[in-house]
Length: 73
View 1 (cartoon, rainbow, N blue to C red):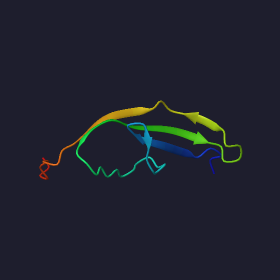
View 2 (cartoon, one colour):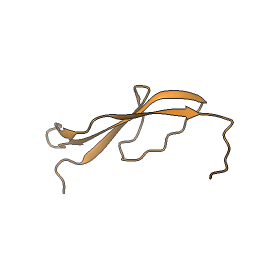
View 3 (cartoon, one colour):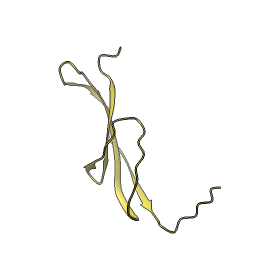
View 4 (tube, one colour):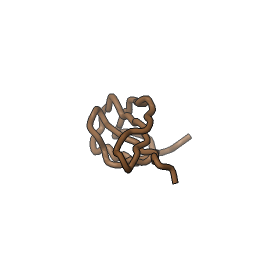
């Protein structure tokens, strides 16, 4: 067993969202532009609570449009 399991911290526009897995499902209740959907990966030692290592934060912009076409190409 890895003494420092991998965790992820997800945020939308700086506000934390639930989930600490590599992939999360995000439901956006409103249309608009969310300027920063970000994730930070880190390993945490469960015995001490110390961070063993972490990645750089990766962010992207997401545009939600209620007039989207459900046909994929």
